[in-house]
Amino acid sequence: MIFDATRTTTTDFSRVAPDLANRARGIPIATLHEAGGKVGFLPSAIKPITAGLGFAGPALTVQSPGGDNLWLHRALEAARPGDVMVVHTGGAHDFGYWGEIMSTAARARGLAGVVIDGGVRDGALLTDIGLPVFARGISVRGTGKDFGATGWIGAPLLLGCVVVQPGDLIVGDADGVICVPQAVVARVLDASAAREEAEQDQIRRLEAGETTMEIFGFHP
Image (tube, rainbow, N blue to C red; front, side, top):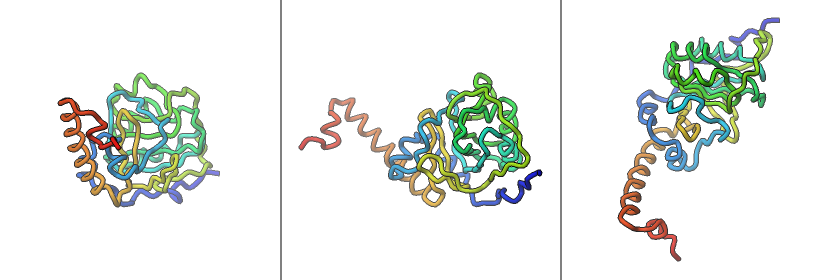
């Protein structure tokens, strides 16, 4: 039986505004996390596969059957420019869900990045393609294409202890990935800018000879 993918595919959801995503690009995710009240920490096992490439954009959420990447191909067709594809693999991490061909397709579609709670392949080539790819690691283990398997596009995902809603702001850098709920993005960005300014002042004071104990008032 061929599964009717349209029944579990939603792409017309509210997305974080492009100007807010642009503001987030370049802000360290550690700053966003702390300024947002320790918000949105995705599993630390998910790391950049593509060296030196970060991203910020709205989440296009994908629930994929374990060991199968057909739903990722479907999501590529459904994606809008600027989206970040965020993929849950049902805990079946040790498969290569993504590779050179899919990165090339995603770049052509204008995706901002890809986050996979699983493995990818063609690691040496992905950086050259120029699309930021974040995953648990490299795995050459092949995936299937089960046309009868149920998956979802555009539904909430649970990654670690964070629920990623479609359209939430996803930001990735060398430290990993963070999810900022769409409703609080503007506030978190304002708080992040203030935090960055305060940290620059702290750095100046440290370089002038003060200690962290003095600056942060840690002495009793």
